[in-house]
Image (cartoon, rainbow, N blue to C red; front, side, top):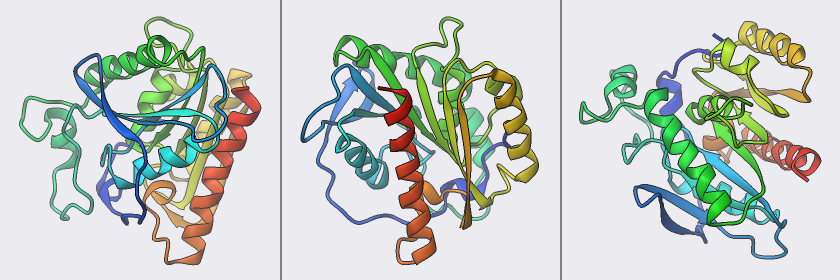
Length: 256
């Protein structure tokens, strides 16, 4: 395992203030997606696929997508949870693994076999409906696994050219080893899901791929900081901003 399965920390955090400016749409007439259009000059043929944490399409992910769009990238936040996101700050006794394997209704699992087709539909929509010829992706927590799995050179798990993930969860070593494009990771100093030993193991795997990679460790923060930080705390706010800047710089270098 390159990172551990999701746990309670995956649903803890803070809602950010702001007014999203994008719009909701459907992918393949089935799955929800939030589209953030560039307000200024658009990077022609470039688009970003946003694979969110288990809170799904919500205030923070929409605001983050708007920020990415402000950098010139059409950005799609995809509902990889098939209409079954988790509310923020679940109780301690919440069965997150039961939700993962069965969904809230017992018949809507969020395993790779069910999530991968949604990701591929999003990639197809970006290419066919929005004219993307090169796709970058961001994956937060749960979304990181889907990004890594669909950034290979083996069909059908292709279509993502460049990736950025923050505090990844549930990524298998063989999945990470199979990537076919540049990958950057934003890691938290305190993270039981992506602890130091798994971070170092991931570095070894990435080195073996021979592809460009970056692993940046942010001090004084914990799992979820890049999406759900407490912005009233200076160190968390700074780390979140720097992780965003890391993603923008990564795409500026490898998606152009």
